[in-house]
Length: 281
Ligand code: MG
Ligand code: MG
Image (cartoon, rainbow, N blue to C red):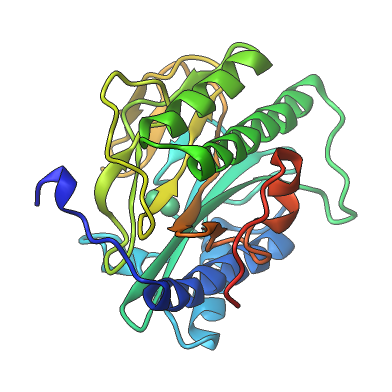
């Protein structure tokens, strides 16, 4: 499939995709609630899967060849694709990125959040290290929303990456991953076109109604260089700096954007940009 050859979706198809997006959002919400020091990442995986299936959906991560889990759980210097395990017990103050996706009726959702793992009472250690992790997650999430807001006005898709890079550069010194990028989404979790989270000369495709993309900045507190661990999946920062990953699947309608994997469609977060997302549900 050539890059200009991706499928543009109809409003009806977006409504079907919204179902997959909402299930993904609910799974991540359940994970966030259960995420506390002492819990294993395999337990979070189980909770995500139970939530998805309770709504009649299926984990689309389990459809990825060779991957047998519902979430990726990446701790501290792990950036993405961390494998859930019974032995991976979370500690208070860990920075955990959770990536999850659901499929229902042939359509897909894909989203990721970062959690600073709290103690049972909800507190987090008040150390400089943990404060820097909170800030790293804030910057990464902020860059995601800057990218989503840019999509609302964009003529070409590369304006999203430019907005993400500009936002992050204004916050301080961070590494934006280039080895892994966002993607189109629809009947498959990963479709054309690629979505870059940094400025590119390549303009990318025109942003037109029917486009659906997963925007997912992966940001480190240090270098943007990565390596894959011996398990064949886990991507870590080469300099062992902490990492954060935030992602949403976003639809472009003829009347505006719709954040498919956010419970409120992006209403609250897009207010700061003066954008009212389309709500078809
Ligand atoms: Mg994802
Ligand atoms: Mg993705």
